[in-house]
Image 1 (cartoon, rainbow, N blue to C red):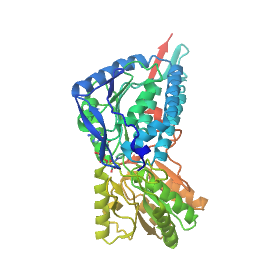
Image 2: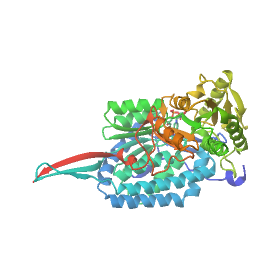
Image 3: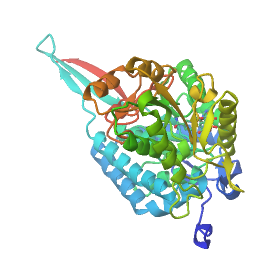
Image 4: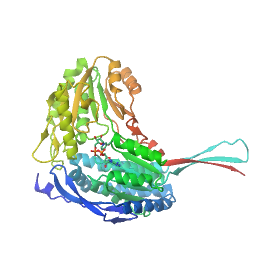
Length: 483
Ligand code: NAD
């Protein structure tokens, strides 16, 4: 690492409650996963801080919902511009705390600005309707109102992107937010909040940011009577717990959970292109992406060609500290992921899988794991059913279309799915037959602000993109008025 990368500044992070940054009741270390060294401190909330945040969100909601959609939209556009202006600085902070290559961090920050703009536009389109009445003196009006204060929980893999979708849709709708950001990657998430603060005009309490012990924070906020809506991104296991709590307290919920995306490659596809695009998507953010392609299922006659190209692309990837020029895959975000990768590979190999490349921890420091390709992986191997959330690609084969679809739909997950084919008949059939919230065919086309984003089955419910994302933060009111 050069001196210039070593000397970058990483800020400490506090809580943002009721319009002010505040110290927590204790603090904890933030670690750079590429060096395993402490780079900053993070304030953690006590129960009193959480109560303050919920109450502030109650007051913030009362004020923010009265701000016109036109003015909410203008403020949001200023926040988007603030992020764009700070993209370089924020991207470096994100890479230091999360490990992804600088180029990916930059894309995330600029993409977040686009997301804010998208929701700023949607803010002005929360239309209602008039329903023809049965009597001439009656007017029947349907309006959309903000649901109320929102508790949002976001993870460390995309420290800004996961938060910006929830915060921006909620604010666009007129809701206030208590955001529990990711404890492992807090400073870039705080930079998003700062972009909103600096947009000038948010009432105190409209947007609050807390960190703490995740289970304690969610338990407190979900039960809090002022909180009306829960939105969570994270694992299916935790999502089910939070959804149950939300149900117990009759709170609306959006759950963006795990996946195990199948990638079907038919023999008639442009195989070298499919291999290159799928490998690029697989190793983005070191595979720590909920829509990462996970099971590579290739038609038998194309298996060798696909595998050859996929492995060649994988071997060329430059792995290293995300701050270094030219690095294409960074470090895993934490030690848990490294251990998980080691366990998944050991289990697959024990059951007969062949490691075509990678398969091991690399480097003297940091949680680096080599981009890995596995062949001959039996269905009983854990990687074929558990979300790896890391840089491991198991490749298997199929003989017929029906067999491919059965395999694609085998798991309880249904977030993203991919297919490559030159046949329009096959591509139309795949689009219909795969049980998944999102299907991308012949390219990697998921995750932009204007398109729906969300899963089915164990991958959760609700959408975090497109106009559907606004629905999560709106309630319907019907007014029938006789004159
Ligand atoms: P984890 O399930 O403990 O944590 C995932 C996220 O949920 C973290 O941000 C964590 O702070 C939060 N969380 C955990 N328990 C919580 C609770 N009781 N209340 C509120 N928030 C809670 O696991 P992890 O080790 O951080 O990640 C492991 C798995 O999580 C991955 O394998 C992956 O399946 C999943 N994950 C998914 C996404 C996603 O984008 N869908 C993001 C990060 C992690």
